[in-house]
Image (cartoon, rainbow, N blue to C red; front, side, top):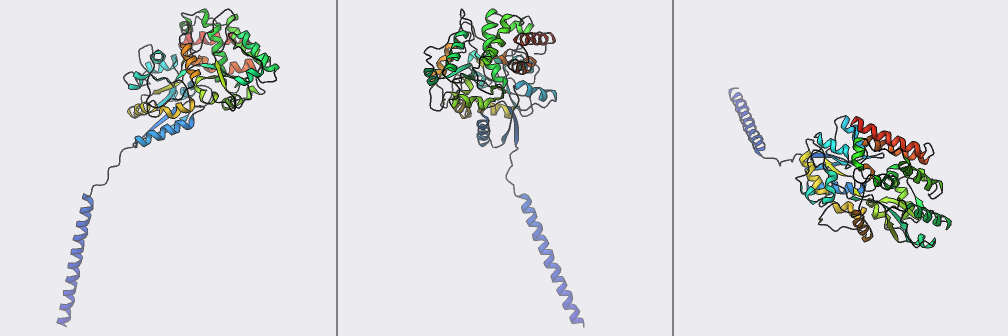
Length: 437
């Protein structure tokens, strides 16, 4: 009996010793695991970009993806603006204190005020600002001297025309004033062709084209030295015959049947197709769409400055800055500045080669694709005695918003040209009075 008990006690001791050794081993392993350094996970930054890109959204995604590959710790959530203007997309963001990190922006008083309020980052010390064309820099400088944006390109509305259709209609000379332009339209219509394609469902282009050309050649030409200052201080009167003529010319083109059927239902992309597919002889579009319009299907494209001038006057070209980009004063500003540099550096060719617009930069490392016709015409226009920018660069933001439906109302016969001119004049005066640029 004593012998058996001793054996059991010894066995129990052995078991306890084994458990103790195992516990020590496990403890040592845990300590070793704790001392192993895990790979460092870089902190991720996600930028938000609110972008105006009606015809190059795919390219903007490609730029964001390429930037992320080069900067794995920074991703870009690209969101696209909708509606008819940049400003109508920005106002709700500002009102709710919810600005993105990067935004598309226009070179106007509204944007300059945002900069002077400290909402937009100072870009004057960046290499991208240094590389922007000197002729564009004043567009992006606020009254307080802040450099708030980088232009997307050199903007000029042009008349793109189908050379074959012009020959078919017997047109041998390009028009140099509005009466000659109407005669060209009449000749095209007589030949059984659709003279022109407009985008009534996207009034932004009506404002960039017929309105901007009309304003330049009917209003700005009368006040060549201070027309922009008159808008700012509310002393520009637009309820006279010259201002009425801006809207009357648009209505005349429509009433004479010089536009495609259903032009008021035609949107941005469809308007481009009307011309590019050879269904209309002309269209008014910006240099920003040259990539699609200069390469029509089966025909050669020509261009000329919209001749909205009177017979005894020289044509006043519309030329200035395209919608550009700004960086907002957010916690991600430094990362956003890196993306801005990439957008105008390695990423610029990704969108320019598709759009084939005129670069806003003095120098660019990658190959740019431009049609020599566009380059030559724009360079010539830039040296005209008088030029004006596109409408979005000089009208107050609330006037921009009211102008789009106003143009449609004139073409729908809901308002007369006289009523439209009076509404435009009142809006400009009111915006100057309330200092709501």
